[in-house]
Length: 162
Image (cartoon, rainbow, N blue to C red; front, side, top):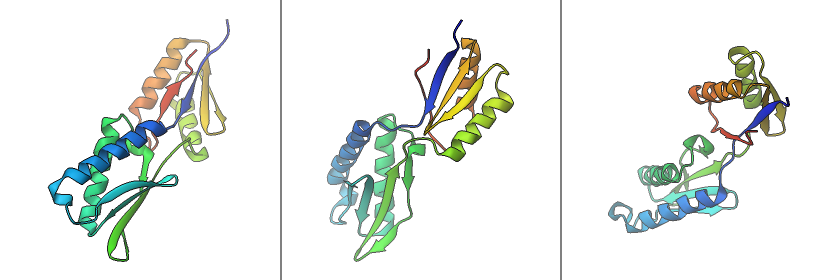
């Protein structure tokens, strides 16, 4: 019998992220506490740029964006937001969406699978994703449960289960 396998990936759906940004823009335009403070959130290439007249307001813009991302089913672990910094008369925060699993994170995940997972399970790093194989589908499902229980600093999705 052939081995069963699945892939561990960390990807953000660009359309869902775009929808979350659009919803945040609408809420910022309507909210009274954002009137006349120049609050905005927009895509700047691959990065998200948040602007407002004060540090507290730009943090509130980030908070609104985070709420919208959660509602759209995007993990906040995928959002890499920087610190507020002054730029002219306004404050800005730059953020980016993490895509792919870095090699250090892949090695950490692979080590967790080796140390704590069933012995029949093998993991293999393939670029920015991880392939997990075993003869037993139950072992693979226990690996998924193990990784979901761990507090890793990347958002993981489990795809191509076959």
